Image (cartoon, rainbow, N blue to C red):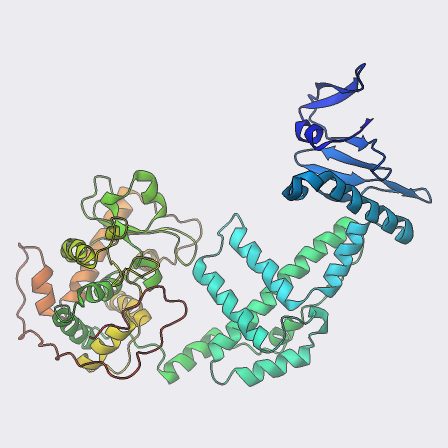
Length: 520
């Protein structure tokens, strides 16, 4: 079918009807299209190149048709929607682009889109590969990447950019260059170095997969045939898991609190510190991190569940203290590191701590002048200027607690490892350990049977008791009234706060809210 196209006509075209003729005025007459098969209307305008038209399918696209030496070509000029940014010139722009493509078909006897794809694959730079791979991770349907994952990808990209590699074509990156740079960079930060190069390998591998599909569709050989980063795997440059663990032990990178000594020291000092210099939020934040074995990114954004709607509870991390459902008191972490939701039962002493936290959080939020939205956080931010609205970085406080407790090394992730050490001490079944650490296989969800949940609650209570019993003053303060008291030493007396001098320590670029400016 051929008629003079206008944007008004193109907008009216639908797949459920198709042109069946022309009336006396020369206008198209439409009839049903029950098969739903796409169709093309060619442009009869003198301004249009011959063979230009619009294909009506699920998406409307402009096309151009040319026949050269008996071979027919009909490449897509572009989606109609892409031309609508400039509505007045949309049709003329599409006709102009189609005319250029028609000339290229005559000159090259090839589909211009296929030529562009081949040229693009051959000239693909490492920076372009990273950009496309990152977009794929962020938008894929199955387990889209978390913000933290994307930040790690960006950090790897910055590393390559500092070496002027992002502007290099992939085919120009030599295995020798990659191996040499890997060796030069591994001494200072071997784990970060390996992580960056693995990201480079993954980005190129994904681009190679897409190019292989394009080549198969076009009936040609792929132009990206080798991943230069594979030299690191072939030459076994990456450390094995055993080597990584050995290196961490030798360098003291992992230092969980010991059930026999340092857990008690840490908790007694932290409990005393909560009353000093407005440290209560940070102390509660660290104690719950230890009692739940969670990551900092999981519990920091928690909200009070009773302030959320049913739909909000499905997508937001939250705490429920008086659950009306089968789960009772629990904490829910949304979209954790592995992309899945994670639900944990609350032990009786964590529940008591959270009841106190609820009163403190409301008082803190009101005192700091937060709006109603910010008051919903379990751990409200210190500052009204906080972008996230919640507390998220207890680094300085943790360092102060560590020093005061006489513990040589301790990081926030060591608190998660301490939870794991206590599970080992109690000989917690492997299945329960995986549930608590959220290491279950992909088929497991945050939905449990009553029997499973009852077992998890029983183990959580035992772990909580064992941890807090190492600090009798804390245990006695949080235990249910019908539990017996423990013999306790004199409560720890917190050190007097020291006035902060000099420049404040530089904050992490990824921390949205911090306690770094606070005297501890």
